Amino acid sequence: MSQEEIAILILVGSFLLMVLLRFQIAYAVALSSFFTLLYLKLPLATICQQMVKGISSFSLMAVPFFITMGVLMGSGGISERLIALANALVGWMRGGLAMVNVVDSYFFGGISGSAAADTASLGSILIPIMVKQGYDPEFSTALTIASSVEGILVPPSHNMVIYSMAAGGVSVGSLFLAGYLPGALLAGSLMVIVYIITLRRNYPKGDKFNLMNVLKQLISSFWALAAILIVVVGVVAGVFTATESAAIAVIYSLIVSVFIYKGLTWKGVWKAFNECIDTLSIVLILIATSSIFGYLLTHLHVPQRAASALIGVTDNPIVLALLINLILLFLGCIMDMAPIILIATPILLPIATSIGISPIQFGIIVVLNCGIGLLTPPVGAVLFIGSAVGKVPIERLAKATLPFYLAMVVTLLLVTFIPEISMWLPSLLMK
Image 1 (cartoon, rainbow, N blue to C red):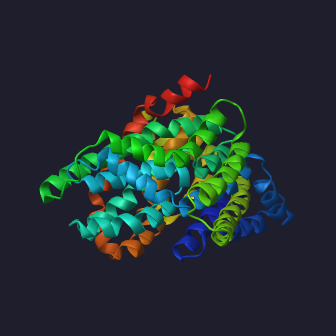
Image 2: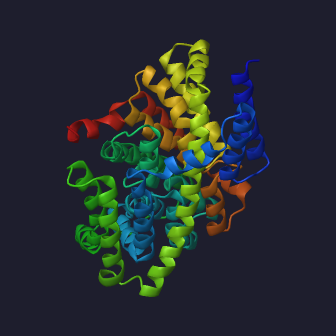
């Protein structure tokens, strides 16, 4: 073996070993990079240089702002209004409350941008109500965690910003627009599964459709939904950058939560800020350590080697696209979302573009794969959050989620092989 091949084995092998030993991902990334640098006899100062370089990015500043916006809006009385709006729109259907769960996640995702926040916030409200109305606890919780994946597709998603950085500066505005239709497609797929299950189990209908109630709830939710318009329309129209729009959205969210909806006191605001700092510290440490890992991957020509290896297996674009998805799904079983985006994007993006997948479409594919990974054991964070919120054992929850896995995989395949699902809105509006 050449020195380069041995270094790759040390880098990847030690990382996977530490992941299996349940090291924190940030430590696993940093230590495997440290061992590789020692073997290659490169200056250890490279660690500090690359960590600083990894987080010295103007576009990266959007991430803490989007996280703060999501926490403020999620804590400020937004959830109840969005649930009421979703109930007015689809609550009249068979299994109406389950349909509400799906639609509400689409709305709430546009505010929180986080599957974990969606599950914790909406799940704590909707799961007890669903169980009280006769839905099984396992079904209610499984649907809640599955629908939460919509939240990472619908803008503004801070994971899209992280992908943009990892992909070398892909347009954040285009990524935001690209997420709308795949998010809606996922919601539709979940609703089909819900309808089939509710018919078989004879789950109840809600109240009859009432147009006046829809209008009333739209007015009540206006200030919450307007936050999405500020971010997305502002970025797409070129009025301000993603970072500037995120900063404005934080101020807007603070005003709405404290003064309009009055769901937050100033004491609650400080608590929300503390929560933001906890989340942000994890994200920034991951980004910083992953930049060292990425530097070594590039130094050792791993992206080119991976591309050659995959193309050596087959040059069929369909098979290559399926292999890319399988790799990302496997990584989702053992790693969290941010490190997958940061580590896998530089390796797999060149392969994806070589078979005609645009960087924007690939961003949606990566994020959706990671979203599915959030629900898969042994590392699926949202699976564990759902288990805690719904008070359902992990093994029973994973079994109840199987039909929803099917809906998510079908959506993933459609997004992979029908580029227009991701690319139609960006090509229409980003000219």
